[in-house]
Structures are given as structure tokens and as C-alpha cells.
Image (tube, rainbow, N blue to C red; front, top):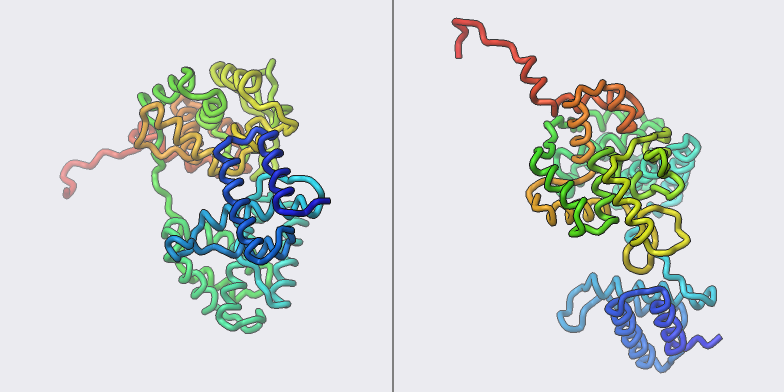
Length: 402
């Protein structure tokens, strides 16, 4: 096999073009290939090796500014990954790679074993992938924090290290979000069998806030629905937004929805929820069925991937994560003229619950539609039924002090 940079580069560009990548993206690849070629020739070679690629990928400083360049790092690493795949397998791997890697990993032998045992325990208990990632990330963060403080054995950790670790997160997390860090942290500490560490995390005093979640006004909802019904919003983005708006599906379930989950005749979607592992069937409104059909029949790229929603530009893989859904709904709301609303799927789930409450839908039914594992999870939505909350207000007795 010809392993010169020129030959591998030509193969990569041809594969990109064959896969339907935009010319602007191909141009970025070609620019990076030229940079790699210049770097290799500066070292007296034109033959690509993984070692050469690793050195090239480490060049993250911009020669123009003399500062770290995130774009340069991304471009160089992306090209090296593709070149390495071609070198190792003889073919160009254009699969989408997730950025990051689940955070830092502990390096000491004891902590590495403890982390692996925790991961295995979560898998054995059948926890959802998203839950394992959330629990695992904060556990690894704590172990790496201990290592950075010179502690490489859990016996050397005490309650103070737990409080110090949480304090170190304060600049990075909003106060209202720290509750979720603690919630994800506690199971790991319980797993270690260290009751003193569990007691310490309870002493942190991090409490969950229960704000009244805003919902869409009637006028805003009409604007969004009208935009989804028109051609100003593409069929894919309209279907995604209407799914979140009318069914309250979680973003992870929208991302993982498969073509076989859709019952076109029955006008329902049946799936197994990623978060709870419970089966769920939700009805589809007529407009949603229409836009979804438009997308699948006319706009969806012809790919072997059976996920309903895929990327519109190459590579036509399934959507990445909940952030993708947020970007889609935010853009739809902007086009609809609703620019001030916060439109994450959490808000849209609350909005769907609010609409069902206003229609006097029983809580067990709302719980079933939203896919809650327990009806208790649905009671939080009572706070958004303002008209019924006002009916519970007691009159102030005459003569009472203001």
C-alpha cells in the first residue's frame, strides 16, 4: 500500500466527495493535508506514520498569534484520525467521533481498579447509558481530584476531601445545578462502603430548587406550530420540534428514535425509554405525522442507518446528543418569531404537561404519556397549573394584619 501523504490525502478527499461532504468541508481537509505535507517534508519525509501524525496533531499553537488554537487542534486531530484509520485498515473511516472522552481518568492503580469496578457494578445493575455516564463522570472527577491533591489510596480520603471537591466545582457549576452533581456523586460514595464520605456529601448543604418552570403562551405556541406547518422550517426540524412540543419526549429518546418505532397507520410511536428502560407508546397529532412523512419520504438522506433523524450534511449519521435537539428547537423558535423563550426539551416537556393539565387530564395519564417511572415525578407539574393553584388560595380573614 502506498502510504505517502500525497496518496492517502488523495484517497481521503475522494472518499469525502463520494460521501457527499460539502466542498467547504473538503477544502478544510485539503488545507490541513497541505499543512501535514509541509510538516513532513520539513522532517525529510513524505511517508505517513502514526508517530508522525501524533507529532503533527500536537501542533496546537497558531503561528500567527502564538496562542493555543482550538480550531487548529480540531482540524489536525480530525485529519490524523482519518489518516490513521486508512493506515491501519486500508479504508477511510469517516464515522463521527464524539468530542471529549468522558472527562479525565484516574491514573493510580487503586483508583483505576475502583473506577473499573464502579463501571462494572453500574452495568450489572442495568443502569441506562446516560445514567452510567453521569455517575461515572463525577466519580472519576473526584478520584482525579484526590490524585491532584497527592492522595492515591481511598483510605487516605476523608470527609474534607469530599467537601473540597464540591467546592472546586462551584466556579464551573451554577448553584442550582450542583444538586445534580451531588445526586450523581452519592451512589458512588455509597458503593465504596465509606459511610463517612456519604455523610460528608450530605453536609455540603446542596439543596434542590423547585422553581415554577415557564411554559409557552398560547400566542407563542401558535406561532411555532404555524412555522412548523409552513415551508420556512424544513421537515426534519419541524418534526423534531412538534415531537417535543406535543408529546414531551426526552431529547435522548428523540435522538434514538428508529424508523421501526413509528406506526404510521396507528399514528403512534412506541419505544423503550433510554432513561427508565420502560416501554412507552405516544399518539401523534396529524400535523406531526404529515411533517414526519415529508421528511422520511422526501428529505431524509438515503442511508443504511435506521435512526429516524440523521444529519443533513455528510456524514449522514444519527444526531449526536441532546445539544443537537436544543439547537434545532432554538432555531425553529427563532424562525417562528419566538426569540425570548427558553426552548430546551425540558421546557417543552413541561409545556406538554401544562397543556394536558389544562385539559383536565388525570395525573396517571400524564405520567404515562411523559414516560415517568413513578407518578410522583409528575407531581412537579402541578406547579405550572396557575389557574388551579389560584383556586387553592384562601381568603384573608377580615381584621387580619396586612
